[in-house]
Length: 258
Image 1 (cartoon, one colour):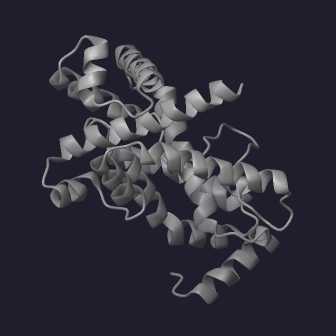
Image 2 (tube, helix red, strand yellow):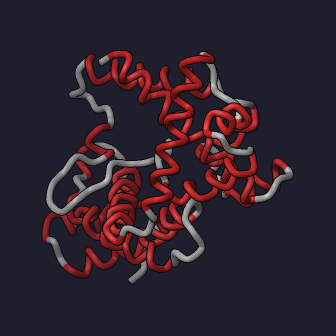
């Protein structure tokens, strides 16, 4: 029987957590199944076309089932927030296990990261594509080709959750603030936001727009391309560079404070 209201879903959760009945579990899986498709579509946006989105959905369903089994409604946060972590983690774990990214692509990603970190240390700002290409002895077109290749790595995403292996582990929900949080945890979150803001402010306006539309407005790469008047492939390149810049900036700060 389909669940049609918030009150009804709350009742199903209560029954399931009290008795663990299979019928209630199945209702929850059906109700939250669209969440899996949403997460899979977001992950698929940065993957090669050879990766079937239907496979990602299948991987994600295991995460959803695990989330339903382990979710504690009394923690005070939404199931959707908790489930996104489990679903995305399940998808990423499966992708890593089948090792679909060639070693050569991972090597290129590390080379770009090293060039970015070196140039930023010298220039005290985000390097341009021309500067990165020059440091690596490449043309800008060749660098853009590398961006396109390494976009499938999912190196880092602003909304990336912790991945999960079998058994208990830390989830995104476990990192959310609650009444029991001490001042240390609050300070760390504030500091991380400040570091991200500083790194984003070093980017070009187009990179900032792409990150905003993708992560805050939930637009697809194709939709962002239409907004900016460029191809989806170009948006993918801009997104990859911006994300790599965030990663290298945070790594540099981490090394400085070590």
